Length: 385
Ligand SMILES: Cc1cc2nc3c(=O)[nH]c(=O)nc-3n(C[C@H](O)[C@H](O)[C@H](O)COP(=O)(O)OP(=O)(O)OC[C@H]3O[C@@H](n4cnc5c(N)ncnc54)[C@H](O)[C@@H]3O)c2cc1C
Image (tube, rainbow, N blue to C red; front, side):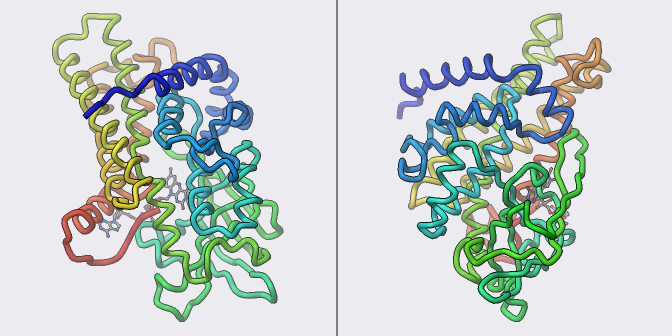
């Protein structure tokens, strides 16, 4: 077994690092901090200009036909440098669903603009009262002539204030069993009746409540067949749950190591740092496996679920341990004078709390692993978004 990445991968890694040095400017970081949106139009456009959005998609879909492992390198380098990657990640998740179940017309209309960085998409699954129990969503899409009328409310629709469309899970058949009556739509945020209000998390990230008040869309907005929503959401979730948090762990370890090098931090700190570095490596390897399983017909989504749970729980555990070791200066915010590790450890600690919730909470995902990997019977069905 060869764990070496290969010359092509290393060259790409170096190229992305150079890109980060050039494009991840104080202005970009300032805009992200000011808005709370982990997406920046200018930065994203520069990424797309390099051909790095959807690079693993087919050439006819606007991609470059690259191996998925190459786009993972791009993501890893960007995220571990603290670049805004949420728009890239979420838009590609929806793109993966469109690639699999979209019509030829939808693929032509949506995928090349995604790759050119012209289209930003948000995920609209969760509702107040329907998060882990996602199949209970109540947002309604009713037939209206040749199109649909959508009414309801979503919560935690991240990036909806900037996105062009929301990938919306709606109930189209209220009489069908709850998992069977769901359908997905790409709802334009410019449509009449759509509105958005911000929610800020404890790390300052912005997510949103979105409202759909008799929003009319044509049938071309439907993604997949009527009633196929549950199946498609589960495909999309397989692309949402993976090894992305390994990059945050790497960021944590780098920040803590830089802090530790500048002082006599003591053996206790070294031990915590060593453990965090080992956790980061485990998370990275689980991520590689998850990514492989996404592109392999033989494997299921459980590898991604494991990588997500492990990565987020390790980020929570290791950021807390390292933060404790930096003393009171560790609690100072990013930008504050005297903040230990420039405030990165406390920021990542706050982010880690949230990371164990979105994309499915740890409790729910652990149950899924027991069912999917170890064959335990299903209880109450749930996926989490
Ligand atoms: C910052 C952020 C961004 C998000 N972005 C998006 C987004 O872009 N799009 C989107 O659609 N959603 C998004 N979400 C929503 C996220 O996926 C949900 O918050 C998550 O699935 C949990 O749902 P909930 O909040 O309704 O909590 P609940 O489902 O109400 O869970 C509450 C608690 O009960 C536990 N619990 C629930 N069911 C079970 C069970 N069966 N077994 C054991 N424990 C259980 C949970 O683990 C949790 O601790 C985001 C959330 C956050 C915090």
